[in-house]
Length: 95
Image 1: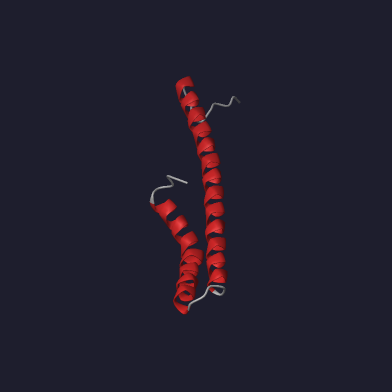
Image 2 (image 1 turned 90 degrees about the vertical axis):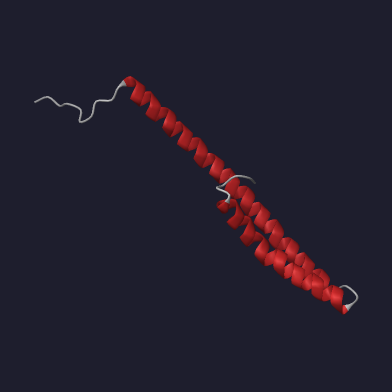
């Protein structure tokens, strides 16, 4: 008994599929690099927020301390969230 292929593909179609597979691999690597940059930016924003909160306890004046404290909360907690949301919303462009 002889076996026959279930689907016969032309050489052009095989080349097209190979190019498509290579492009998908390059896109995956680009996504990994982008995600690493996003993670780094998020960590920096989180640490900057905590630095502002720590600075709030060492400044003179109640208003300046409260402004730094609440600014640190905004930067430290909302900064990383908006970094990730905006990068996804823009379709992965940037960073």
